[in-house]
Amino acid sequence: MSAVGLAPEVPVLVLAPSERAPALARRFIAERFRELEIADDYVGRLVVTELVTNACQHVGIGFIVVRIVPGHDGRVLVEVWDEGTELPVLKAGDAEATSGRGLMLMAELVDDWGVRPLNEPGKIVWASCALGKARS
Image (cartoon, rainbow, N blue to C red):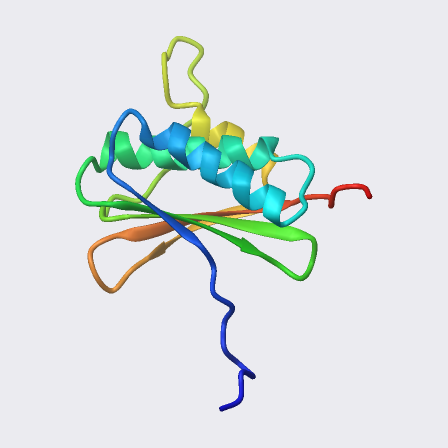
């Protein structure tokens, strides 16, 4: 059997929506970035924190799945799947608001981001980050 055309296996993290979920996702990102020899995981940790926190706050049911997919172009794709059907929306900055800036901040730090609705209940929110490799 030929392996041509098969997608590589990518480790995933499955979380319950809880207060601990963002911290567990950050730890997963840090471990994956070390495995991929990516020196700076700051943007990845920020992205996964925002997306997992949003899934916990706005969905709060089912499971949250986190994947980190390395690209061939020096980018890393961070994906967060949840069972919610409501799509995230960038809000205009409100100086008086106590929340609601995370997605806007994330969008400024990544190369691109978006949402893929699923055929089953849920969606995948993804962000593409350009990252440098660790120095030898």
